[in-house]
Length: 305
Image (cartoon, helix red, strand yellow):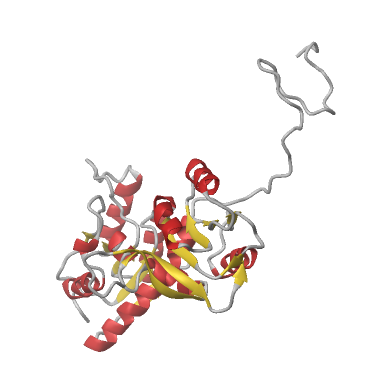
C-alpha cells in the first residue's frame, strides 16, 4: 500500500498546484504524509455528508473538487460547519486533498469530462492556457456533436446524461436552432461570455448563469448568436469525479499499488425541489404610483383588512 505522500505526488502530477488560479486554495488540507492509503473517495464538495460517507467507506483519502477553506479561517472549532468537517476527518484518519481550478484547466480536465458525458467531441480549449505549447490545456472546451442536433435536443441530452438535480436545464435562445458547435464549461461560466462569442459556437452549456450577464449576452447578440444552456453547478462538475478516479486507477496499476478508488454518488447540489412557474405577468399597463392588477381581479382597494 502506498503512503499518502506517494498518492499526493501522483495527484499533483495530474493536477499541478501551480496551475491553479492565484485566488484558489488547492492541495492537501488534512493528512499525515506517512499514513498508508488503501481506499480513496472522489466527490465534488467537502461537506459533512460526504465526509460521513468517507467514514462509512473506511476511506483513507477524500479528494474533492471544491476547496474546504477558499478564503481562509481563524478557527477549526467543531461548532462550525467546516470545523466539524476537519474534526471528523482527523478523528477518523482521513486525509483531504483538493484539485479545483488546476483540474479545470487540465488535459483532460473538468470540461473534458462534461463533454464526454454529453457525447461531444472536444476540438480545443475555449480559453487556451498560454503556458501550454501543445494548446490542449485551458478553461472550457469547444466541442462538436457527433451528429448535428438542435438546442432543444442538446438540453434534453444534458437533462438525461448529467446527474439529476431540482434545477434541470434552463435555456435562453431559440430551442429549434441547430447546434453544430458548442462550448462547455463545468461550474460557473458567465465570466467566459466574451470567449464564447469569439469562438463562434452555436450554444454554450455551463452553470450558475446570472440574470444580468445572461440578459446582456443575449441582448448584445445578433440572430444566430449562441444559445445558453444553464445546468446545476454540481451536475456539470460531477463527471470529473469519474474521470479523476479512472486516472488514479491507472496510476495505481502502473505503480502496482493496491488502491480501491470510489466515486461518491451522493448529490450535494443545495437545491432539493423545483416548482414550475404557472402564473403569467398581467397585461395591464402600470400607472406610475399605482399597483398593477390583473383585469379579472376585483377592486378591493376600499375593502377592510
